[in-house]
Length: 344
Image (cartoon, rainbow, N blue to C red; front, top):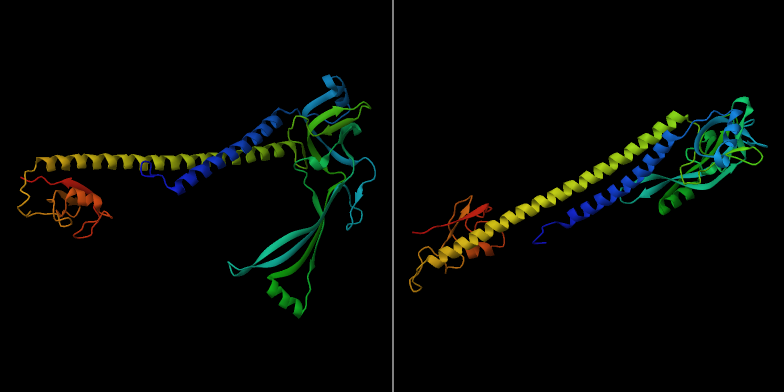
């Protein structure tokens, strides 16, 4: 790129920073929209008056509201397979394999894990508030922030003999064991739900994922904690987008600076070329008479330039331009600049 000296690395950095900035800004806008909707969402007390509020609302629906209540199953709850007496409405069973894998590049064993089995179960449940007012939660597994509590965790250590050890070194894998966990949303736990609240034909209040695509929340955290967490996430994405944009601007300014210096060097070279041509046109030399100050490279043209910083006068301007590297032919020092040599 002679006219526009931008390296491939600079182009890749510029494209990557702009792409990442656009992606992070898109995520930030989504997070910011979620935070704005949370700030605007009304917090309704879960009591006997809630059904009357919905009944007087057009369409018997509130698009985005905040409800807090205790978890109560509609029918039979889920029972823990490992902890007697523990019941819940959401149950998650995970069996995870842990092993060591040989990394040939780092020449060491690294930890690796793989999920062998995972099952998530749920039963219909309500959020119950004062006066035993209840809101049925629909599609709870689609909610964001539904953190489950670990009620059972056990690691089963792997056992192997001598032949197994030989096979492990040959295969590059050492099983450590299996981790068995059970997580539940317990009955009686307090949850905060944010979504679309509707009043069914049988005067049953139901909380469901918003039909306008807004985020459906169901979390054990309170409303303020959830709002601040979403706000902090939006801030993180905003900072990442700004940093990537600044990196792109920095690369652009660096390329512009190189281009400006390239234009300056080109203009200086053109000026020197015109100056040397003017000097050559004004010289009246006898071709038959040998030159006393001939160029040490071509031996046919007079020495017409001073090489700085070393100060040697040893070549003509044409040979200077033809140098493969900008080094003085006499002392090999780098040539910083060239000035014409005026001969009287």
